[in-house]
Image (cartoon, rainbow, N blue to C red):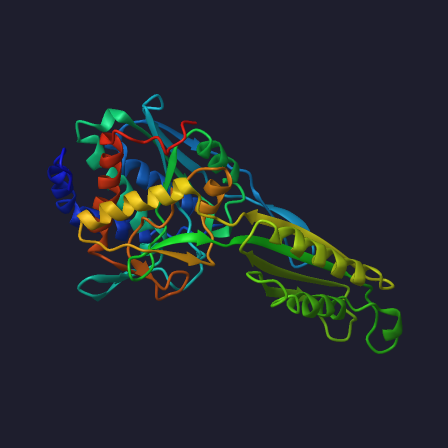
Amino acid sequence: MSAEHDFSPWLDWIDDQQQRMLDDTIRLALINSGSYNVDGVNEVARMLDQISADLGGTREYIDVAPQVVVNADGETLEQPLGQALSIRKRPDAPIQVFLCGHLDTVFAIDHPFQQVRWLDEDTINGPGVADLKGGLVLMFTALMALERTPWADRIGWEVLLNPDEEIGSPGSAPLLKQAALRHQLGLIYEPSFPDGNLAGERKGSGNFSVVVKGRAAHAGREHHLGRNAIRALCDFISALDDLNGQRTGVTINPGNIQGGGAVNVVPDTAVARFNIRLERPADEDWCLEHINKLLGWINARDGISIELHGGFGRKPKLLTPANQRLFELVRECGESLDMTLKWLPTGGCCDGNNLAAAGLPNVDTLGVQGGKIHSSDEFCKVSSLAQRAKLSALLLMKLATSDDLSWLERR
Protein backbone atom coordinates (compact mmCIF):
# COMPACT_ATOMS: atom_id res chain seq x y z
CA MET A 1 0.00 0.00 0.00
CA SER A 2 2.32 2.75 1.25
CA ALA A 3 5.68 2.82 2.99
CA GLU A 4 4.42 5.53 5.31
CA HIS A 5 0.75 4.80 5.87
CA ASP A 6 -1.29 1.68 6.41
CA PHE A 7 -4.65 2.17 4.71
CA SER A 8 -5.80 -1.43 5.12
CA PRO A 9 -8.18 -0.94 8.11
CA TRP A 10 -10.39 1.40 6.10
CA LEU A 11 -10.18 -0.68 2.94
CA ASP A 12 -11.14 -3.76 4.94
CA TRP A 13 -14.12 -1.82 6.29
CA ILE A 14 -15.34 -1.38 2.71
CA ASP A 15 -15.37 -5.15 2.23
CA ASP A 16 -17.82 -5.33 5.11
CA GLN A 17 -20.14 -2.92 3.24
CA GLN A 18 -20.55 -5.17 0.19
CA GLN A 19 -24.04 -6.49 1.01
CA ARG A 20 -25.31 -3.07 2.01
CA MET A 21 -24.00 -1.58 -1.24
CA LEU A 22 -25.68 -4.32 -3.25
CA ASP A 23 -29.00 -3.83 -1.44
CA ASP A 24 -28.86 -0.06 -1.99
CA THR A 25 -28.03 -0.46 -5.67
CA ILE A 26 -31.01 -2.73 -6.21
CA ARG A 27 -33.35 -0.42 -4.27
CA LEU A 28 -32.27 2.53 -6.38
CA ALA A 29 -32.56 0.60 -9.65
CA LEU A 30 -36.16 -0.32 -8.83
CA ILE A 31 -37.09 3.39 -8.84
CA ASN A 32 -37.72 4.53 -12.39
CA SER A 33 -35.72 7.70 -12.98
CA GLY A 34 -35.93 8.27 -16.70
CA SER A 35 -34.71 11.79 -17.41
CA TYR A 36 -38.23 13.18 -17.84
CA ASN A 37 -39.74 11.31 -14.88
CA VAL A 38 -39.27 14.23 -12.49
CA ASP A 39 -40.88 12.48 -9.52
CA GLY A 40 -38.70 9.40 -9.96
CA VAL A 41 -35.49 11.40 -10.36
CA ASN A 42 -36.30 13.34 -7.19
CA GLU A 43 -37.11 10.13 -5.30
CA VAL A 44 -33.68 8.72 -6.16
CA ALA A 45 -32.11 11.96 -4.88
CA ARG A 46 -33.99 11.69 -1.59
CA MET A 47 -32.97 8.07 -1.12
CA LEU A 48 -29.31 8.90 -1.75
CA ASP A 49 -29.63 11.81 0.66
CA GLN A 50 -30.70 9.30 3.30
CA ILE A 51 -28.03 6.76 2.37
CA SER A 52 -25.32 9.38 2.78
CA ALA A 53 -26.77 11.20 5.80
CA ASP A 54 -24.02 10.08 8.18
CA LEU A 55 -21.43 11.90 6.07
CA GLY A 56 -22.83 15.22 7.21
CA GLY A 57 -21.98 18.27 5.14
CA THR A 58 -24.12 21.11 3.88
CA ARG A 59 -26.95 19.78 1.72
CA GLU A 60 -28.95 21.67 -0.86
CA TYR A 61 -31.58 20.70 -3.41
CA ILE A 62 -31.17 22.90 -6.48
CA ASP A 63 -33.75 23.61 -9.16
CA VAL A 64 -32.28 23.44 -12.65
CA ALA A 65 -33.56 25.21 -15.75
CA PRO A 66 -36.00 23.22 -17.91
CA GLN A 67 -34.82 21.73 -21.15
CA VAL A 68 -35.96 23.47 -24.33
CA VAL A 69 -37.25 20.82 -26.75
CA VAL A 70 -38.78 20.89 -30.22
CA ASN A 71 -41.99 18.87 -30.60
CA ALA A 72 -43.35 17.10 -33.67
CA ASP A 73 -45.17 20.26 -34.73
CA GLY A 74 -41.94 22.25 -34.75
CA GLU A 75 -42.86 24.17 -31.60
CA THR A 76 -40.32 24.86 -28.85
CA LEU A 77 -41.44 23.78 -25.39
CA GLU A 78 -39.90 23.73 -21.93
CA GLN A 79 -39.49 20.26 -20.45
CA PRO A 80 -39.27 20.29 -16.60
CA LEU A 81 -36.37 18.42 -15.02
CA GLY A 82 -35.69 17.01 -11.58
CA GLN A 83 -33.65 18.72 -8.90
CA ALA A 84 -29.91 18.43 -8.38
CA LEU A 85 -28.56 17.57 -4.93
CA SER A 86 -25.35 19.20 -3.69
CA ILE A 87 -23.50 18.01 -0.59
CA ARG A 88 -20.42 19.95 0.49
CA LYS A 89 -18.01 19.45 3.36
CA ARG A 90 -14.87 21.32 4.46
CA PRO A 91 -14.75 23.95 1.69
CA ASP A 92 -11.66 25.48 3.34
CA ALA A 93 -9.55 22.30 3.41
CA PRO A 94 -6.23 22.40 1.51
CA ILE A 95 -7.36 19.83 -1.09
CA GLN A 96 -10.71 20.26 -2.85
CA VAL A 97 -12.24 17.28 -4.68
CA PHE A 98 -15.43 17.29 -6.74
CA LEU A 99 -17.42 14.05 -7.04
CA CYS A 100 -20.28 13.72 -9.48
CA GLY A 101 -22.86 11.26 -10.75
CA HIS A 102 -26.28 11.43 -12.34
CA LEU A 103 -29.67 10.47 -10.99
CA ASP A 104 -31.40 9.82 -14.31
CA THR A 105 -31.45 6.83 -16.64
CA VAL A 106 -32.39 6.45 -20.31
CA PHE A 107 -35.40 4.28 -19.45
CA ALA A 108 -38.70 6.17 -19.52
CA ILE A 109 -41.44 5.47 -17.01
CA ASP A 110 -43.34 3.38 -19.60
CA HIS A 111 -40.27 1.40 -20.72
CA PRO A 112 -40.65 -2.38 -20.16
CA PHE A 113 -37.22 -2.62 -18.51
CA GLN A 114 -38.01 -1.90 -14.84
CA GLN A 115 -36.84 -4.92 -12.81
CA VAL A 116 -33.58 -6.30 -11.42
CA ARG A 117 -32.60 -9.94 -11.83
CA TRP A 118 -29.56 -12.11 -11.30
CA LEU A 119 -27.74 -13.38 -14.38
CA ASP A 120 -25.18 -15.36 -12.41
CA GLU A 121 -23.67 -15.31 -8.93
CA ASP A 122 -21.69 -12.13 -9.67
CA THR A 123 -23.90 -10.30 -12.18
CA ILE A 124 -27.17 -8.41 -11.90
CA ASN A 125 -29.22 -7.01 -14.75
CA GLY A 126 -31.39 -3.96 -14.20
CA PRO A 127 -32.06 -0.34 -15.20
CA GLY A 128 -29.27 1.87 -13.94
CA VAL A 129 -27.40 -0.83 -11.99
CA ALA A 130 -24.26 0.21 -13.88
CA ASP A 131 -25.27 3.58 -15.34
CA LEU A 132 -25.12 4.97 -12.77
CA LYS A 133 -26.78 3.94 -9.51
CA GLY A 134 -24.19 1.38 -8.50
CA GLY A 135 -21.55 4.04 -9.03
CA LEU A 136 -23.32 6.48 -6.71
CA VAL A 137 -23.52 3.86 -3.97
CA LEU A 138 -19.80 3.04 -4.14
CA MET A 139 -18.92 6.75 -4.36
CA PHE A 140 -20.61 7.44 -1.04
CA THR A 141 -19.03 4.33 0.48
CA ALA A 142 -15.57 5.61 -0.50
CA LEU A 143 -16.35 8.93 1.21
CA MET A 144 -17.56 7.08 4.31
CA ALA A 145 -14.22 5.27 4.43
CA LEU A 146 -12.31 8.55 4.04
CA GLU A 147 -14.28 10.16 6.85
CA ARG A 148 -13.19 7.36 9.20
CA THR A 149 -9.50 8.06 8.64
CA PRO A 150 -7.28 10.49 10.61
CA TRP A 151 -6.53 12.41 7.39
CA ALA A 152 -10.07 13.36 6.41
CA ASP A 153 -9.63 16.99 7.47
CA ARG A 154 -7.11 17.54 4.66
CA ILE A 155 -9.73 16.97 1.99
CA GLY A 156 -12.76 19.11 1.32
CA TRP A 157 -15.26 17.52 -1.00
CA GLU A 158 -18.41 18.36 -2.87
CA VAL A 159 -20.86 15.86 -4.35
CA LEU A 160 -23.24 16.89 -7.12
CA LEU A 161 -26.01 14.52 -8.14
CA ASN A 162 -27.50 15.92 -11.32
CA PRO A 163 -30.86 15.00 -12.86
CA ASP A 164 -30.20 15.30 -16.58
CA GLU A 165 -26.87 13.81 -17.68
CA GLU A 166 -28.49 11.29 -20.01
CA ILE A 167 -29.94 14.13 -22.10
CA GLY A 168 -26.70 16.13 -22.14
CA SER A 169 -26.94 17.95 -18.77
CA PRO A 170 -28.76 20.96 -20.26
CA GLY A 171 -30.03 22.19 -16.90
CA SER A 172 -27.10 21.21 -14.70
CA ALA A 173 -24.26 22.36 -17.00
CA PRO A 174 -23.91 25.70 -15.14
CA LEU A 175 -23.63 23.82 -11.82
CA LEU A 176 -20.86 21.63 -13.23
CA LYS A 177 -18.92 24.64 -14.49
CA GLN A 178 -19.23 26.47 -11.18
CA ALA A 179 -18.06 23.39 -9.27
CA ALA A 180 -15.12 22.90 -11.62
CA LEU A 181 -13.90 26.40 -10.85
CA ARG A 182 -13.69 25.80 -7.10
CA HIS A 183 -12.01 22.38 -7.04
CA GLN A 184 -8.65 20.87 -7.98
CA LEU A 185 -9.75 17.54 -9.43
CA GLY A 186 -12.93 15.72 -10.34
CA LEU A 187 -14.10 12.13 -9.87
CA ILE A 188 -17.13 10.94 -11.85
CA TYR A 189 -18.86 7.62 -11.35
CA GLU A 190 -19.85 6.52 -14.82
CA PRO A 191 -19.32 2.76 -15.24
CA SER A 192 -15.97 1.50 -16.41
CA PHE A 193 -15.62 -0.45 -19.60
CA PRO A 194 -16.83 -4.07 -19.25
CA ASP A 195 -13.21 -5.22 -18.77
CA GLY A 196 -12.68 -2.71 -15.94
CA ASN A 197 -10.58 -0.22 -17.89
CA LEU A 198 -11.23 3.51 -17.79
CA ALA A 199 -12.06 6.16 -20.35
CA GLY A 200 -9.36 8.63 -21.36
CA GLU A 201 -10.02 11.03 -24.19
CA ARG A 202 -13.67 11.54 -25.13
CA LYS A 203 -15.31 12.99 -28.21
CA GLY A 204 -17.38 16.13 -27.98
CA SER A 205 -21.07 16.10 -28.82
CA GLY A 206 -23.88 18.28 -30.11
CA ASN A 207 -27.61 17.66 -30.35
CA PHE A 208 -29.61 19.50 -32.99
CA SER A 209 -33.12 19.74 -34.37
CA VAL A 210 -34.27 21.21 -37.67
CA VAL A 211 -37.81 22.33 -38.38
CA VAL A 212 -38.95 22.57 -41.99
CA LYS A 213 -42.07 24.51 -42.93
CA GLY A 214 -43.76 24.19 -46.30
CA ARG A 215 -47.30 24.75 -47.58
CA ALA A 216 -50.23 22.37 -47.21
CA ALA A 217 -52.43 21.58 -50.21
CA HIS A 218 -54.75 18.90 -51.49
CA ALA A 219 -52.56 16.08 -52.81
CA GLY A 220 -54.72 15.55 -55.87
CA ARG A 221 -56.61 18.70 -56.77
CA GLU A 222 -53.92 21.29 -55.92
CA HIS A 223 -50.71 19.35 -55.48
CA HIS A 224 -48.84 21.96 -57.49
CA LEU A 225 -49.72 24.63 -54.91
CA GLY A 226 -48.19 22.69 -52.04
CA ARG A 227 -44.62 22.82 -50.83
CA ASN A 228 -43.61 19.45 -49.38
CA ALA A 229 -41.76 19.84 -46.07
CA ILE A 230 -40.89 16.16 -45.93
CA ARG A 231 -39.15 16.25 -49.30
CA ALA A 232 -37.15 19.32 -48.31
CA LEU A 233 -36.19 17.70 -45.02
CA CYS A 234 -35.11 14.51 -46.77
CA ASP A 235 -32.86 16.51 -49.08
CA PHE A 236 -31.31 18.24 -46.08
CA ILE A 237 -30.77 15.01 -44.15
CA SER A 238 -29.30 13.23 -47.17
CA ALA A 239 -26.81 16.05 -47.74
CA LEU A 240 -26.05 16.23 -44.02
CA ASP A 241 -25.30 12.52 -43.88
CA ASP A 242 -22.99 12.89 -46.87
CA LEU A 243 -20.72 15.02 -44.65
CA ASN A 244 -19.67 11.81 -42.89
CA GLY A 245 -16.18 10.80 -43.93
CA GLN A 246 -15.20 14.30 -45.03
CA ARG A 247 -13.40 15.22 -41.79
CA THR A 248 -11.47 12.81 -39.58
CA GLY A 249 -13.11 12.16 -36.24
CA VAL A 250 -16.45 13.78 -37.10
CA THR A 251 -19.58 11.61 -37.26
CA ILE A 252 -23.10 12.87 -37.90
CA ASN A 253 -26.07 10.70 -37.03
CA PRO A 254 -29.60 11.64 -38.16
CA GLY A 255 -31.57 9.87 -35.47
CA ASN A 256 -35.23 10.89 -35.65
CA ILE A 257 -37.68 12.22 -38.23
CA GLN A 258 -41.30 13.28 -37.72
CA GLY A 259 -43.72 14.90 -40.13
CA GLY A 260 -46.79 14.75 -42.23
CA GLY A 261 -50.20 13.29 -41.59
CA ALA A 262 -52.92 12.24 -43.96
CA VAL A 263 -51.40 11.05 -47.23
CA ASN A 264 -53.83 13.11 -49.31
CA VAL A 265 -52.36 16.35 -47.92
CA VAL A 266 -49.03 17.87 -48.97
CA PRO A 267 -47.17 17.99 -45.62
CA ASP A 268 -46.35 21.46 -44.37
CA THR A 269 -44.19 20.52 -41.34
CA ALA A 270 -41.34 18.08 -40.79
CA VAL A 271 -38.86 17.81 -37.93
CA ALA A 272 -35.57 15.94 -37.68
CA ARG A 273 -33.10 15.47 -34.86
CA PHE A 274 -29.45 14.59 -35.23
CA ASN A 275 -26.29 14.16 -33.16
CA ILE A 276 -22.72 15.13 -34.03
CA ARG A 277 -19.57 13.69 -32.43
CA LEU A 278 -16.15 15.29 -32.89
CA GLU A 279 -12.57 14.87 -31.74
CA ARG A 280 -11.25 18.44 -31.69
CA PRO A 281 -12.75 21.77 -30.64
CA ALA A 282 -12.03 23.21 -34.11
CA ASP A 283 -14.36 20.59 -35.60
CA GLU A 284 -17.33 22.58 -34.30
CA ASP A 285 -16.67 25.46 -36.71
CA TRP A 286 -16.28 23.08 -39.65
CA CYS A 287 -19.61 21.40 -38.85
CA LEU A 288 -21.51 24.65 -38.39
CA GLU A 289 -20.08 26.10 -41.60
CA HIS A 290 -21.35 23.14 -43.61
CA ILE A 291 -24.69 22.98 -41.83
CA ASN A 292 -25.28 26.67 -42.51
CA LYS A 293 -24.58 26.11 -46.20
CA LEU A 294 -27.18 23.35 -46.27
CA LEU A 295 -29.68 25.54 -44.42
CA GLY A 296 -29.16 28.28 -47.01
CA TRP A 297 -29.64 25.78 -49.83
CA ILE A 298 -33.02 24.67 -48.42
CA ASN A 299 -34.15 28.18 -47.47
CA ALA A 300 -33.59 29.33 -51.05
CA ARG A 301 -36.49 27.16 -52.21
CA ASP A 302 -39.83 28.78 -52.96
CA GLY A 303 -42.30 28.36 -50.09
CA ILE A 304 -39.89 26.39 -47.89
CA SER A 305 -38.14 27.45 -44.69
CA ILE A 306 -35.81 25.53 -42.40
CA GLU A 307 -34.70 26.51 -38.89
CA LEU A 308 -31.92 25.02 -36.76
CA HIS A 309 -32.22 24.47 -33.00
CA GLY A 310 -29.72 23.10 -30.47
CA GLY A 311 -25.95 23.21 -30.40
CA PHE A 312 -22.75 21.65 -29.13
CA GLY A 313 -23.27 20.92 -25.45
CA ARG A 314 -20.01 19.10 -24.72
CA LYS A 315 -16.49 19.90 -25.85
CA PRO A 316 -14.05 17.08 -26.61
CA LYS A 317 -12.19 15.89 -23.53
CA LEU A 318 -8.46 16.06 -24.18
CA LEU A 319 -5.81 14.79 -21.77
CA THR A 320 -3.83 17.57 -20.12
CA PRO A 321 -0.60 16.97 -18.15
CA ALA A 322 -2.59 17.27 -14.91
CA ASN A 323 -5.04 14.67 -16.18
CA GLN A 324 -2.14 12.36 -17.01
CA ARG A 325 -0.78 12.74 -13.48
CA LEU A 326 -4.21 12.01 -12.02
CA PHE A 327 -4.55 8.93 -14.21
CA GLU A 328 -1.15 7.74 -13.09
CA LEU A 329 -2.15 8.09 -9.45
CA VAL A 330 -5.33 6.08 -10.10
CA ARG A 331 -3.26 3.43 -11.88
CA GLU A 332 -0.92 3.18 -8.87
CA CYS A 333 -3.91 2.79 -6.56
CA GLY A 334 -5.24 0.05 -8.82
CA GLU A 335 -1.94 -1.81 -8.70
CA SER A 336 -2.08 -1.73 -4.89
CA LEU A 337 -5.48 -3.43 -5.16
CA ASP A 338 -4.34 -5.98 -7.79
CA MET A 339 -6.16 -4.10 -10.55
CA THR A 340 -4.48 -3.43 -13.90
CA LEU A 341 -5.99 -0.27 -15.33
CA LYS A 342 -5.59 1.24 -18.79
CA TRP A 343 -7.01 4.39 -20.38
CA LEU A 344 -8.95 4.01 -23.60
CA PRO A 345 -10.35 6.68 -25.91
CA THR A 346 -14.11 6.63 -26.47
CA GLY A 347 -16.69 8.31 -28.63
CA GLY A 348 -19.06 8.55 -25.69
CA CYS A 349 -19.64 11.75 -23.73
CA CYS A 350 -20.36 12.45 -20.08
CA ASP A 351 -20.04 15.21 -17.52
CA GLY A 352 -16.29 14.63 -17.59
CA ASN A 353 -16.37 16.57 -20.85
CA ASN A 354 -17.99 19.51 -19.06
CA LEU A 355 -15.43 19.50 -16.27
CA ALA A 356 -12.50 19.24 -18.68
CA ALA A 357 -13.88 22.18 -20.71
CA ALA A 358 -13.82 24.23 -17.50
CA GLY A 359 -10.20 23.22 -16.89
CA LEU A 360 -10.70 20.58 -14.18
CA PRO A 361 -8.65 17.37 -14.51
CA ASN A 362 -10.92 14.41 -13.89
CA VAL A 363 -11.39 10.67 -14.11
CA ASP A 364 -14.92 9.92 -15.23
CA THR A 365 -15.33 6.12 -15.16
CA LEU A 366 -14.78 5.29 -11.49
CA GLY A 367 -18.14 3.55 -11.14
CA VAL A 368 -18.93 -0.14 -11.24
CA GLN A 369 -17.63 -2.64 -13.74
CA GLY A 370 -20.56 -3.24 -16.06
CA GLY A 371 -21.75 -3.07 -19.61
CA LYS A 372 -24.48 -3.07 -22.26
CA ILE A 373 -25.66 0.24 -20.84
CA HIS A 374 -28.59 2.04 -22.46
CA SER A 375 -30.16 -1.34 -23.23
CA SER A 376 -32.34 -3.88 -21.45
CA ASP A 377 -29.23 -6.05 -21.13
CA GLU A 378 -27.45 -3.55 -18.83
CA PHE A 379 -25.44 -5.40 -16.19
CA CYS A 380 -23.26 -4.78 -13.16
CA LYS A 381 -20.54 -7.02 -11.75
CA VAL A 382 -21.55 -7.22 -8.09
CA SER A 383 -18.03 -7.80 -6.78
CA SER A 384 -16.92 -4.53 -8.37
CA LEU A 385 -18.96 -2.53 -5.85
CA ALA A 386 -16.47 -3.11 -3.04
CA GLN A 387 -13.46 -3.33 -5.34
CA ARG A 388 -14.05 0.03 -6.97
CA ALA A 389 -15.18 1.71 -3.77
CA LYS A 390 -11.74 0.76 -2.43
CA LEU A 391 -10.12 2.25 -5.53
CA SER A 392 -11.74 5.64 -4.88
CA ALA A 393 -11.14 5.47 -1.13
CA LEU A 394 -7.47 4.67 -1.63
CA LEU A 395 -7.15 7.51 -4.13
CA LEU A 396 -8.66 9.94 -1.63
CA MET A 397 -6.43 8.69 1.17
CA LYS A 398 -3.31 8.98 -0.96
CA LEU A 399 -4.27 12.52 -1.89
CA ALA A 400 -4.83 13.36 1.78
CA THR A 401 -1.42 11.99 2.80
CA SER A 402 0.65 13.18 -0.18
CA ASP A 403 3.53 15.60 0.33
CA ASP A 404 3.57 16.70 -3.31
CA LEU A 405 0.43 17.88 -5.03
CA SER A 406 2.13 20.67 -6.93
CA TRP A 407 0.62 19.36 -10.16
CA LEU A 408 -2.84 20.29 -8.87
CA GLU A 409 -3.77 23.90 -9.46
CA ARG A 410 -5.31 25.63 -6.45
CA ARG A 411 -8.54 27.24 -7.60
